[in-house]
Image 1 (cartoon, one colour):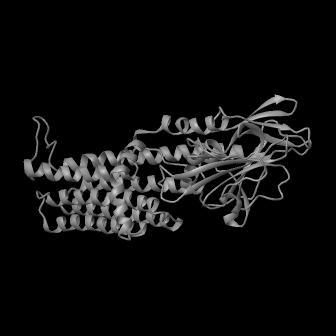
Image 2 (tube, one colour):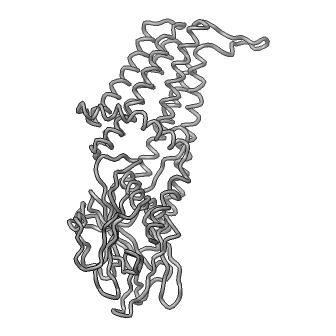
Image 3 (cartoon, helix red, strand yellow):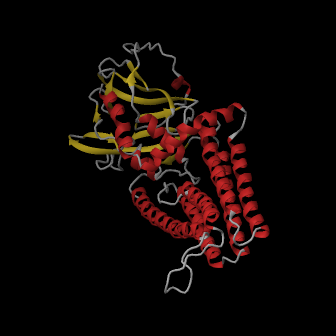
Length: 457
């Protein structure tokens, strides 16, 4: 089927061919820690509890550094090494809380906020301990570098949060939180090991240079210097990327019909999840046909609200468990004619927020639900989702009712598309959602009978 080809190849195009190394590494780590995550779920730990444990461990990191600054001497780096080990162990909980939420189907908006806030506290406590230790042992220049690294780390996180509150994605850069945790943790461990073998008071001098060029503390301060530079570069790069994205967003919004907008931050995780489910690989579900008006299918989609009162609606898209709906509407100009440059207007109906309308975010419009069109002449258009160019829909006026409809293939026959529905079950993860099926529903223009096609994922 044409739609099978569409959904079957799109995930390869949209995800697999453009998956960064960082993402592949993250997925590999998830496969390793998932058994432990399932154990935590069985023990009754919630994502917020896991996040809290991570904060407590980072407070422990600060305590070790502070204790080492008060009780240890300048050449005693045991505290640095042990603090580094605890940094890595605490950092593991940054990954565990998200996986517990996804695998345990316990995701919530407050949980996302709680995780973000406690991550900032954790990082601040870690840098507090490092700065205290360095000042206590008179490494004043190193403490200054550490403080600059702290500034960069906070600005990396703040720039992303502020950009996403304005409806754009902002995840670029080479010094995101996982990289920062691993860098500091490994550097601290290496510092402790180096001091153990070379001696805490070891200093390397080069003839002609009036000061030493290396000591065990250098193993910690050199990575911190890199961190101070790269975090601030990352923050600045995110600011530049956000500027470009926001300017493009403002420019595009001037060309669309204004709707009531949602002033809150968009839920980017749900966007990526829905994009992956809508355009994932599918295969036909055996034994399901829709040759008559009576379709014998246990259909959860029929429990969802149906958009009503939209004069020029073409079709709509829904998914479980959220009833918020994507509507594709014929774009009519003030003169009563179809806008040739943008014949289809795509937007949200947010039933979870009182049924208000809202435009797509920049990311949604650019990578998932936005459409591109080509004029075929005589008031006919070829349209396709921006995420995949090889599956066109055809927008043309029917001779039966003199109205425009979107035509596609459903059950190997040309049909007027009315609805796309995606069924997602619990138990999946962000990277591998538990999708049960994708369903197309429409009308046979020849017989007027309802037709349906369900594709199992």
